[in-house]
Image (cartoon, rainbow, N blue to C red; front, side, top):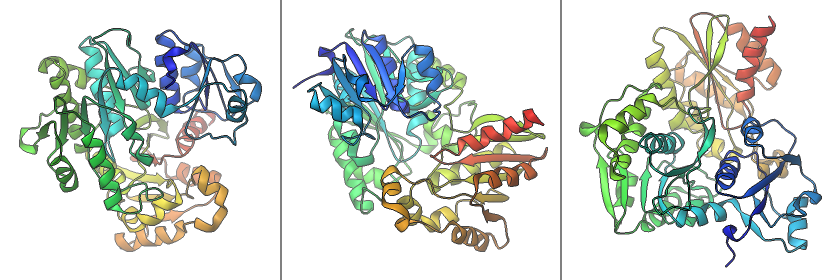
Length: 443
């Protein structure tokens, strides 16, 4: 079986993806030469790649020539000209999960899984281990503000190497990994385009837990019945972080869900030999991750925040935290749903998630690449969702606006000193938050 460490000159197809950029940073720090390619569009990772000195080109078959091996994002198949060229030239071709699994499985790995909160929890744990001066490598699914990227690049050649990884359940990708320890934040049905029903989703987590050896550990909370059921079959030590035993941390991000994530990371750090005082100090110095309650700027005195939340539970929890922090302010939620399949399957839950927002702007659904290819047959009428939000609220507080520029104009008119504007979604809605601030600079 071929392994990535047999090679030195690596070309990465789809390098601008957050995970791919983080992997590129880890490879570069461990002696590999890295180039990459992607679409021309602007990504939040562009600055990271430039800082690392990784040359990035637009897709073209010539870019694979001279590479010892190719690493491709799972978003790209043989329909991509570079993937096709690599296959025709018999250049060793690896997928992102295969390479991450090879590196992770060769070391003492801690995988962080769950429907919500895994990005923040992964970053928190890696931040603690870094502060404790452990030889830690980490790959996180977002830019961590304290690091300036989604990676910590430790020395993987040493026996004391720890590897902390955000482990995605989509298409059961987390089954590639062999963790020594794991955190599961929660199990809340998602990805209906792959998992036909909640039972299939639960079974994927059962398989993941079965990968943890008897000598390892599983960290979890006590407030999730599905997770409790899954954990009953664990062969490893199970650490349940009970509500009455949780620590209270002075975090930069507000909300009970961030306190919960911090407690899971804290307990995992203790399992890794970090002193409690060191773990606490690290958590309280942690500034969060990009697109998780990220402060973008202000317009006319209104605070503008961007958040990745794209599931009803995430929306509800995040809005509750914002309402707690900004009591008395008018909260405007601007939401771009992610994928037709999720929006349709959880339609009523989405409509009921905006309790803590005084005004709601709904945008068109950001479709997956597969859905875009299939055309409009799976579309969801967001005007109907706006009506549903208003029905639940008993008043008109939600509108659906189709055109992006009209959304910006509408939200600009709401920007006042007593207002907090929050953009939500896993698509490209972050550009709207930034456009609001840019317009402030122009005015």
